[in-house]
Length: 175
Image 1 (cartoon, rainbow, N blue to C red):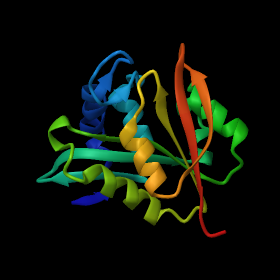
Image 2 (cartoon, rainbow, N blue to C red):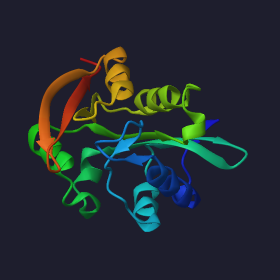
Image 3 (cartoon, one colour):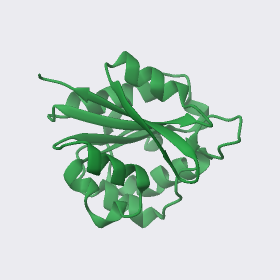
Image 4 (tube, one colour):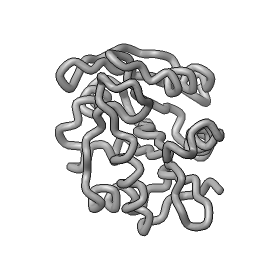
């Protein structure tokens, strides 16, 4: 079932992120060198966030899609995030930033990621959606493909975090 995340699920979300973190040199799919954050960070991210969805079965979180409004990105939780700094500087608000789509390794290929992403997009009332995904040295083919399929346009590439290149994608709806 796909539904809004509960505050009590912050620990499961944190565990998924940590289990899916991969190095830029790894042959595995996952979150490329995503910063490790404590459970408390995810509790703050979930608290009152109507753009954070989970796929769950029998109270077990199988995956999630996290998204934040530009107003949420301006709070101190995202201080120091080079991608967020670039987006806030270069993309005019209001917008919804799709931050992560992550699944347990055992749940890949079952369609949960696609459904989670579509759920976030369909339930947002904002006309502008923004996402970032790794381009180099490890390209996130799944995210690039999903953004393209959903009508996102590559705005530009940025190089951050000691040489990782990310594509910044935007979708302008209702125009």
